[in-house]
Figure (cartoon, rainbow, N blue to C red):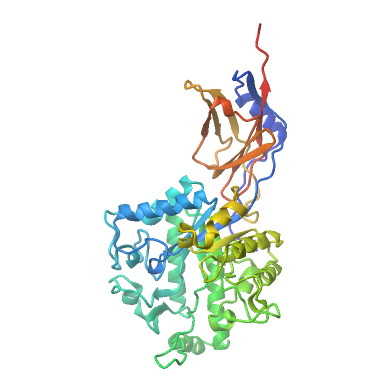
Length: 513
């Protein structure tokens, strides 16, 4: 089923290309050369999602601790974004709602304690962390996905009292205490509505590229002081369901609550902004025995997450199952599980498995081989790494090895063709002398639709160089002694579609006698 409208754009052709170049290229004398329109097809760029989770709960990744000033928080976030660019990542998944709180300006939920140390207290001086993150990520050509925890209401390690406007105070009838934590009860339809409302508030007000959920739906099992398992106390909503004619078993009812939530959230996001991707990062094993050799935690039965159903039905634009295991152990083998997930992906959504850099004993060679295996698996087109803290250091030389061995060149995020499959118009490209003696390459869109990214390819000798530039950039200056033989530009839209190329080739000019 297709949700949301399809964005329509004018078609492009080689005739359009040649006409646009004839009217837009400014040949110029420079080192006895000029640039003219050419019929050149550059190498196809790599299409690969390279994301990383930035966790805010417990100050895991950002901010490094609660109570930093706004300027210190901004500086830390800029360091993360700059590091991502340096490592040639192309997306950040930033946790903005750890526990019914907000790392952004909200009238629905209180400020998160992970900013200031006190829930409900705004950062000082005042600023909007999510607005700042989106602006600075886009300035660097990075996607910014807002990561939400839909039902956790208070973390077991929370250190400040709930604010007066926290959901546990304003709607206590929706909240259940489970162990030391608080949870919205997914069995309460009003609680599900509320979480969808929170997400859509962010979708409407912020220029995010994606909405992301992790593996927390119903909570993982807690134990009492004696080590006995605790039952999740959803008796009120279960009783109401039965009294109103419900016929499902309790476990099936719980799964149905989550299924309906995921489906409706996907539809609601598409109704607001079709280009905003919706992604889920479920537990890496759907059920033990799928495939046959797999053993481990049963997320289907324990946290009531039928993630295979969501994938098969296309209730998401990307899935990032947390495949945090090594390649070899047969009970939780990375490539075996990856292939199983790819086989379930009948709607051909994006499959970007999650990889744990921080697991004890994890080596650089293990991570490199996992990325290589992902590239070899049909249907898998990228990776998401847990967590960004590992990128800020270089534990076990993993980060250095990634940069050197598999991420030496930039990559475009794969296109989401089910959202929009019409490419942008061919960009207009000009080359001109500057008064400084340098040469300026300039470009702009040929249609009214904003350009998300520019893909600039240049050829010198036998080497092609690729640069992925933010859509707000429209020029680049080059020294005369490094002018490439070929310049090719493409426009990229928010769904990842690329325009036809606008190529220029350097042509020798014979000086007049």
